Image: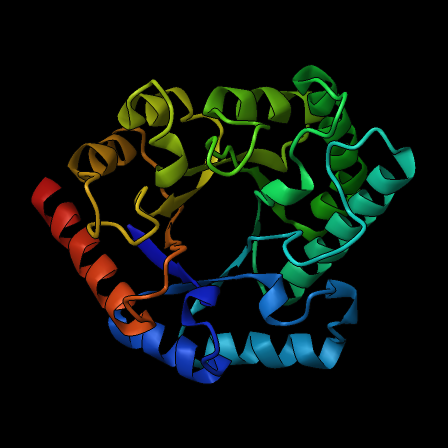
Length: 273
C-alpha cells in the first residue's frame, strides 16, 4: 500500500513542518487542498508553485494531487443550468489541472458538494448532464497536463448529487475521457446499501484513488469501520493507487491523527499478508 495524508489535516502548520512530520510518521505521499495555498488557484504564481513543489520533494514526499477543488471559491458550479457559470467552472478546473501538474501531482479528486448539489428545479438527470458538460470542457487541459480527474460520490450528509459509486461511474462514462475516473471514500461508501468490499469489486475498472477515514469524521481505525475486508478487497482487485487519509474532525490533533491512522492501516495490511 502507498500511504498519503491530506495536508489540511495540519491546519495552520507551516508546510515544511507538516510535510516533514508526515514523512517522519511513514507517509510517502501528500494530497493538497488548493485553498491551503490560496482560495483562488489563479492567484498562485509560478514562484509559489515551485516553492511548494520543492518543499514536498525536500521532505521526501510525492505530491498525490489535489482535492477540495472548489472549496472556498466563488462563482463556480458544476450542475447549474447557467451555461456561463459552467464554462467558468470548466476553465477553473483547467487551471487546477495546471496547478496539479506544477506540483508534480497526477490526481484531482472532484468532491466539493457545495458547488454541485441540486439547484431548485434541476433534476438529478439534468444535473448529470450539466456536470458531464462542465467536466468535458476541462478535459483537454487535464489530458494535456497528464492529470486524471477522479469523481467522488458523497453520502446524504454532504448533499444530494452523485451519492453512489454506480452514479460516479455513470458520470465518468458520460464524460468519456481516459482521464476521467472514480474516487472512493470509506465515509461516503458507508452510506450505501451495498457493502464496501462489493463496491470496491464492482468499481475495479474505474477507481484510481481512495480515501481512508470513518463515518465519525476521524481517521481509519478511530471509529467503528473494520478495515480488514476493505483492504482485503483492495488487494483482491489489485488496487495499486494511493490510500490517502482524509479526516474532517481535527480535534484529536494532527500528530495523533497521523500516527494512529497509519499504525492501524499497517496492522491491517500486515495481518492480511
